[in-house]
Image 1: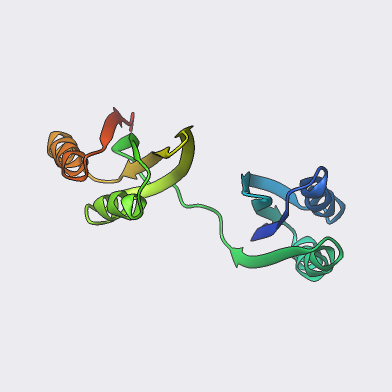
Image 2: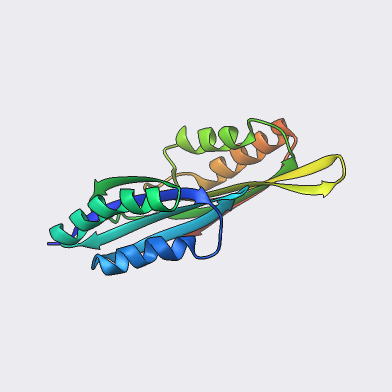
Length: 177
């Protein structure tokens, strides 16, 4: 019976650093089930879901902190279980663009949470457009697990965008059950 472990590593972005973590995973006989790597400023962050035998997972738990110390990485780990698939009625893709200002991401995550919509991915970034003006963009993927009135959600999303003076678009995709 495989066991599962989520690991994260954060450190100064430099060539080969993510390979150090990936090599440790391979040498510990674990499998990478899912992973993401992103750069934030001069830092990189890596998150992985690993599977493996109890011994392989224990090896990672014992050796990842040492690797972190050797390469100036902040690491964290948490045991978990495999993702339980649910019946998805709709998948949502949403995009928001605005001038940069604090609090926008929270408004949209709150919008989803208040409707029991499960956030799957969120990418928010500030882009420098002109000398004194930045553009802020949010891309969201979410899932709805029960029948709902998508037109109502779309109207509420559009009303939220209008109230915040942002440009936004939301699309719904019906799942084939």
